[in-house]
Amino acid sequence: MTSNAEPGPLSGKGPVGVSGPTKSLWLRLLVMCSAVGGGALLLVALVALLMAGAAAALSWIFGGALVMAFFAISLVIGHFAGRNNPSGAIGLFAATYFIKVVGFAVVLFAVGTPDWLSRGWFVAGAVVTVILWQAAEIYGFSTARLQIYNDPDPSEGGPSV
Image (cartoon, rainbow, N blue to C red; front, top):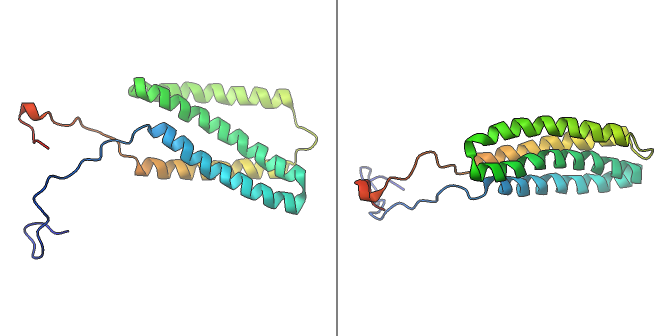
């Protein structure tokens, strides 16, 4: 596409369309990250099952599932808080993070280490899921369309669309 000042075909005289902000950013991120994390968990669990047995596969899934639950809680809270109070969402994230860390620590200490748990596969599942989840979140945020400025009101002399 060229501008009207450059040689070549004219760009057109029609109005430029507006796509608007991304609807339900947090739920979109939750679905995207869950698909990436869950897909990787299932794929590597199958490999773990074939290589090291059922305990390795379950350990891998358990480690990754804990990470997914940990991050999913934040995105769900972001969805509800972001809709009603976008500026307060960061404060809720911080409070939720503290509650999640303490809550997950209490649960893990209360449950203890099951006999079937393979620590290496558990840690690997958690670390790989963190990396994939964060990569999917970064990609999701980078493709999000966030409206920074209010659209001009045509009745107040702004450009009409």
